[in-house]
Amino acid sequence: MKAAVLEELKTIVVKDVPDPICEDGDVIVKVHACAICGTDLRTFNFGHRNIVLPHILGHEISGEIVEVGKNVNNFKVGDTVSVYPAIACNECDWCRRGYQVRCENTLQIGDELPGGFAQYVRIPEKGVKNGSLIAIPKNMDHKQAALAEPLGCVLNGQELSDIGLGDTVVIIGAGPIGCMHAMLAKAQGANKVIMADIKDERLELAKRVNADYYVNSSKENLLEKILEFNDGRKADVVIVACNVTKVVEDSLELLDWEGRLSIFAGMPKDNSMVTVDANIVHYKDIKLVGSYGSTYWQHVTALNLIKDGVLDIKNIITHELPLEDIDKGLELVRKGESLKVVVIPW
Ligand SMILES: [Zn+2]
Ligand SMILES: [Zn+2]
Image 1: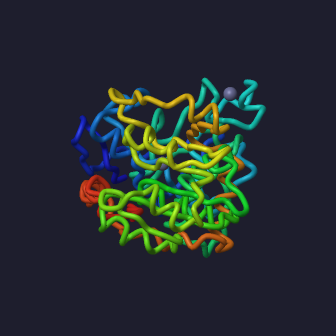
Image 2: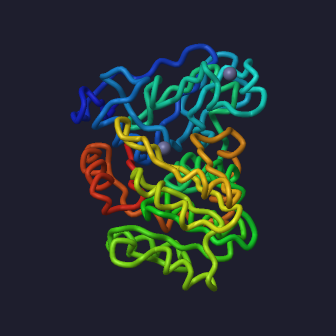
């Protein structure tokens, strides 16, 4: 099969590699769409603690089952599926509480296991049994189904920061993740959604998701704009969807009483320290919220929101590229000139 292999840092080569082998209990998925995630770009440039090169990246996958191993009863050849990439042990306490990403024994498709920037991907028996394959309707668009993975992570972040009816939500970083946050916050009943970024082109692209207000925070004072849009009140939730520590520090000032500061983006590995005014947190009942990954059920919920059109996710797909052009895709993501870039391996 053809696959995009990250051979060393910053070098990705599209070439023929052996097809994955379907052992007993396994399933082989023909990849119809695999979206590029910010994490893929990060691994491309800096590597990843769990990834040994050479490696096939890609964890936002949708496709069709083309082979099932012995003893697979719940799936058959021809089924179309969205892939939940975390394969957990399902035996530890965190797994049993439903938090597969917190499992110490998780193997992630695209991290420890070969991913979806290839024509086929193998789902090992444990994944087949534990929810890695989620059936989708035959006529569902694979590019959209692939986005259930990042949307599930966005849902996790919003559940942990209690976004709900009537909230004023400020999203800093108008990339694809920021855009998904905007769409989902609206669907959760947020009253006002304000998106901020320092690049006009990015804000322009983000207008596809119909947030209520867009602010270029390099040209305008974000706090003043929030007060102006929100009848003199600060925000209930600020979501940091960019990897800039200064933004985390500055965001506390934007929050009203009982505000939630969601640190959704991972910060640069060697530059993740921030200074927080503990008195603002203390006297204003502020909550600092982290979030990473998603549960199986959040992935399923995200998929249903896409499938049923609650979120019009196609609006944020700006580019589809063949596998051969994956380096162009990574470059688009790096330059921030795209929202979601989806690789189509066939
Ligand atoms: Zn991702
Ligand atoms: Zn576990």
